[in-house]
Image (cartoon, rainbow over all chains, first blue to last red; front, top):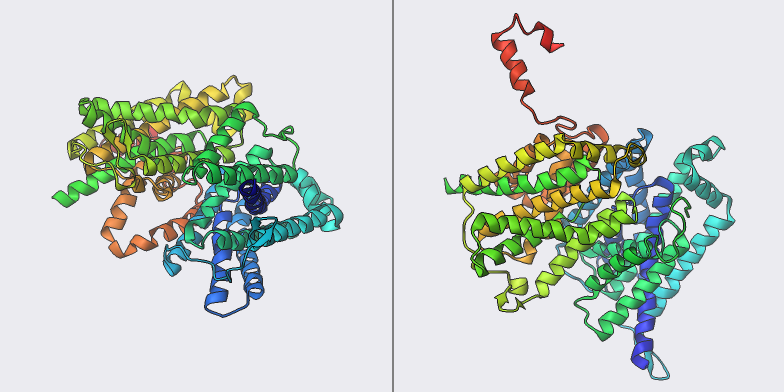
Length: 291
Length: 299
């Protein structure tokens, strides 16, 4: 029973990281209708910036995390301006947007690979003692990752549903042309959406780096986030979070009780099973509804 | 001479695999970043057939390709049936290819067959020669050209341009996408088989996401809805790193920036929307030697 609860807590914390990523995808997808493949590059970038901040610039953890967030936001917004905006202005097909995003991803990941090398690095945080509650040991980092991820998601929810800017983004996600006719600044919406994406990917990258390791290909984990958002139901933020939680917990249980080697295989099989029996995902809405 | 042979063989293999991606991404508009998985399936299957069951080499390659094609239905049917948006199909291909690599990495033996896991499958008979590759490329190009110009090929183009409109014109989306995916995976599997019989050795590390990105790069640079474009770029992309060894570690970075630049400035790629035909030869012939008669044809 102790082991089960331990696994559950670990699963929730990894699920929280997945939900940050899944929400980042869902947000860009719902407004601009394409998958931001560059996202996993951003995630690795965020993790490496925090890593460099701590190891080379001797910053405390919070300052390094802040630096990583700022730099990732700059990268994300810059990508929007240079790589996506010209295509969007021209109303290019979605395939072109995806290829462009894939290009940004390839370039980011391989530049990191060139500079830092492909080795796995331990994220330099103090090895905190786990907390014991009735014999169940709970990692402090798990708690922190879970807590901060949910905090970020809550802030995002408040921003999207309780502010005027958020209303603008939600309006754009329904119809970007009509929204701009109603006086919503399209470019500002793009800036905000990609800035949020940058924050989400950086936070997820740092926590994923702490939980496992920092390496250039770490962004491959974003497949899981996408699987989670399909499992939950496409294009809706709450469904993405629910899907991430389910996937995170199931995955941890599989690696705890069966084998950690086949964890990734399991996630993929899970996706296929879900697609066969729930083609719209678990919380499937009609595919026209968004956000 | 041996060096030039190597380049021709590797280039030819890359051409066949890139043709597979071209039918799916270029013609049907389905983004794939997991074709290395199909190459792995075809490669291992044909190697097993030839080595363990003594199947003749061309048949082994065809079996490998067919096996890869059939396996593609595992992702194709669920993803297309639920009308997942194209993006999510791409995720399914990526997940599929990573799963295949994971499985191969951890499978030491199947029954009495020693796959070797991460160490690789050794001692595969060596059959792939320049002649074999050239014949395979010509046949692949010929059949792909036939497919693309057929009604099925036109259906694929219709699906890539507007799914709803295509459906209203009576195109069966599921069937069209499945056919395109089958052929695409078949080509990748054949390329994997040729690779197995060339290296006489297969390792899961051949089939990483880098391989998939290379194939995608060939199609993006070569051009959407073109066969001859990806063929040329697939060959160049093999040739280029060979000529510039120091370029090797910068290769993917340059590809990445080129993806963005190509999409912004020349989204149709090198030869986008150019169909492979010999019309240019006829026009050229007319211009050079039959100037007077050719006036009506040039318009």
